[in-house]
Image (cartoon, rainbow, N blue to C red; front, top):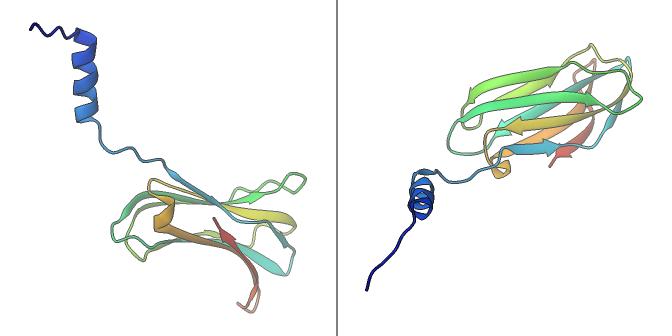
Length: 129
């Protein structure tokens, strides 16, 4: 019995054997919360895995019709139980939501969009999923 194998088949097998496990980057978003001159928007992402996350972006995004937002935190090598936070007092009106992207599984991240009063008390929250 003669076995014929094409070069394309051999290369395909070789490529599959060298490829690592497939993993998509995580994308989590929260619901939008209204902000005003008396509230401060803040987005918090937490690494709940047992390994560091190499890259995590946490952005406050204004909904259409609201003033544009430029608040994005870029965090590298976020350790287990580590946080990445975006937010501040620059946004004064509109509706803002949180967008978290990371080179990790979505199961390894928890995130929350919140508005905070000047006193430090939390006014409203929305879970990022």
